[in-house]
Structures are given as structure tokens and as C-alpha cells.
Length: 247
Image (cartoon, rainbow, N blue to C red; front, side, top):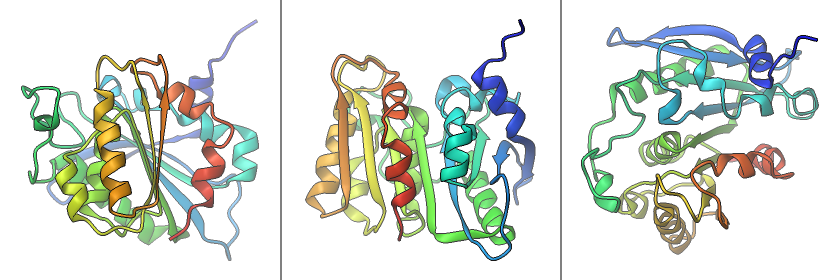
């Protein structure tokens, strides 16, 4: 019997695409659309930012974590959606970081320019929204590890764009969170035994957003190391919470 992995099945359902930015940079990405599209319906859109381990130029590794949720037949029927999974090049990052910095808030710059790769993602997102039946009130962003950092970064730069954001084991300079006014609903996940990205990053982001009156939940997994996306994705209410969020 030939065994086909869930990741391979996801790859078969996501089309392989490439986007060229205004600066001439090529962004590889995978795209999923609803199984059937009603001409009179507007659909949600999910932007998924992968972690550092899935960087590259194969336009495939970014589907390793998370893609299966969207190709699951039950979820496709219950939550028809468009999904974009861009791939970050090997030596790039979604969000600005001080790679030589300590594992505290100095790891995150306060006001650095937007990385070229994330600029290309934003251009892709804008173009996709303009050319597809997207509900502007149901645009979502999520990411894990480096992608969780990119998730925070995107909301800081575009605080009124997303209905919901799910940063998983990520982080951000909390001064940036203090200064934004956003209607985005947050659901933050982290493992308390994370040896790669300190759990304090998510705790601090949560307390900062909570103090501002932002709609935010924080879910911490006891004893879980860096792969907190696994228990997060396995929660029964993960997709339900996401798709009920509206601006």
C-alpha cells in the first residue's frame, strides 16, 4: 500500500504560484480557494506565515505546518475560504529582528523599515483582494515562530486590515503594540517550556494588548517546547474561533 502524507495531500490542493513585487522581487506562494465559488458570495481570506525552518525556494516547505487544516474536507465544507501561504527566502525574515540581540525585547527593533519580503507579501495580499471575491471584513493572519513575529508586525503596520490575528510562539516590541489602535481580535499561543522563543514574549504582548482594551486571548501550554502550533492547531475550537471573527 502506498501511504500519502497529509502534507503531500495538502500540496496537491494548493496551487503553486509566484508573485513579482514592484521592486522586482519574486515571492513564491501557494494558494487555496473554496471548492466551489458562488458568484454572489464574498469569502474570507487567511494569510499564513510559516516559521524559519520552512524558508527556502522550493515553494513547498511552507505547507508543512497548518496547511492540512484548510484542506481537511470537513473544514473546507464548513469554512470555505481562500488561503495564501507565501514562502520566505532562506536568508530573509518576515519581521525585523536583532539577530544578535539578547532573548528579551531588544530582540525586536522598535521602528525598523518593513523587510522587502514582507512588503512583497503585502503587495500580494492587496492584489489578491482586488482580484478575488474576498470579504473585507473577514481577512485573517496567522503565523508560527518567525511567522508569529511577522503576524504581530503586520498588524502593527496595518492595524485596521485584519479581523483576527493568531500569533503562535512569536513576539514583538510591545511599545509598538502600545501605540496602535486596532479592532483586530488576537488569539496568542505559546508553550511555557519554549527553549527557542521565550514565552515571556507572548505573555508581554498579551498583557500590553489587554491593558489597551484590545480583544485578546492568551493560551499557554504547560510543558510544551517550541512546537506549540501542534496543540494549538489540534484545539477543537481553533477554526471555529477564527472564522467567526468579523470587523
